[in-house]
Length: 393
Image 1: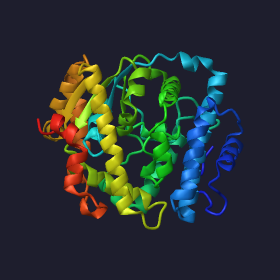
Image 2: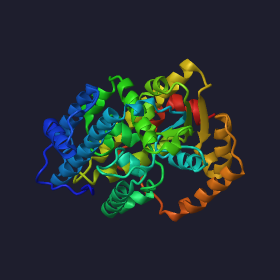
Image 3: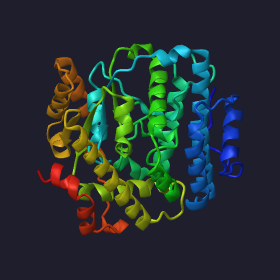
Image 4: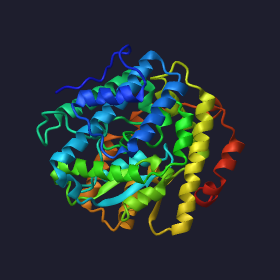
């Protein structure tokens, strides 16, 4: 079954009940699973409708994305009903890579998951973590094709995105998209939703991470060769609720990629501006700057405070500059800290990935702090505690 990625702008409305009904109709299923998800879903949809100033095409784009995420959830819940053994899948969570976006975390994730035996979630799986109807187990051809069309459409609409984040349907990527499927995480990347962000700042994320665990079990069940192999997670959004991450995955270590936030923040804003142009005629650069400063300063402070409370034992630090200078060495350092060895086969795989994905194959990403109303003094003050410990040292 081939699924549509081009909705009709005139047929969709941003109403939570209508979107859920459309998802249930498309899936032919009704059970949405744990109902805690309905609150963030409804708050997010209301914020999109009242605050985001979407174009008609943007409304269709965002609505279709929401429906697809709900359809995937409906299909997963039905699969668990039919195959309750999914919840018996034993996950080995090796570590989660966190840190600000634009700090080399994607590079480190893909370098480490190029090592044979380490699992990562592929981009096509993130877009559709549930098999399509009538899909032959072990043959997700149409889901891969769907993701390839998405990449092609994204790059056609915003070719500059290729300079910001290397998109690939088949490479591993951050499970932020799985968090987004539960209406959690940095959802303001696509459109401004300040009331949702304010609500999320006070919410409990344990349900989100419990469901993330279920989604990973579901992915492992679909591909039995993953069993017994450790998973490497990665998402900047894990810094929003690191306590929930570590509670639900109690054996996981945390790898933090470090780069000066003053260098990073304008790049993050440029990425959000580029993405928002898909759904908004004129994204508000000043709002993007302010919201990202507030969001990431709070996230880094939360992670730093947690680390001060529980100690350094669960954390591994990787410098962005060291990663660029010696990626093999930093991969070896991280694996050693995790109790693994980078053997000759693993080093060859890492070098092969590096050769195929050289940064100089992409154009430069151009932006300035002033574009987003960011003042150096304000950024220094916002990130002072983090920078004092991890950047200036």
